[in-house]
Image (cartoon, rainbow, N blue to C red; front, side):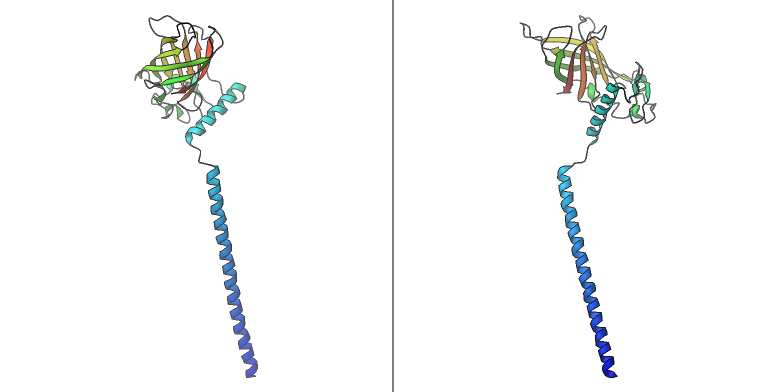
Length: 244
């Protein structure tokens, strides 16, 4: 009898030892598996960080501007505003008078008409120059060459908050015998709502050319510019301008 009880006790003890070792083995294997997973995760994070970086706000604005321009060209999405209106932006199209931008009152549903970026004076700083390779399609038989628009004076009046009044110089090479190029004095304004510089002949100067620059590329440093006949806005030349 005692012998049987002893055997049962030994068997139970052996079983407990085996269970403990089995549990220890399972835990070690689980820990090893978890360590392996963590190591793989870190490797993936390192590989991903080399492939992709966080997209900044400026890049997002530029991409949205490109998409919006394409949509406008194909008439598939953009709500076309009236001649004296400007788009609020955002995913839901809305147009308001361009006189309501930057006047201290939010008129767009999303408040974009009073946004700091919308009302920034960065484009109109005195000394700002925008240059590009102008391609002439009319008015004069000129070869493509670098053209520069330089802001020489800038006035933002409280009574006209939606506009900045400007003086500027338009410079381009005519490739004639003088090789001096041509410099034309201009005056006009910057329209916050339309993000547009509109320049015509300065007072007491011969009316030759004007300039229209649309900052529709998502930032304050690049614009789609045209050299035009002031009276008719007939396009003589076009250049993609960049600040320099």
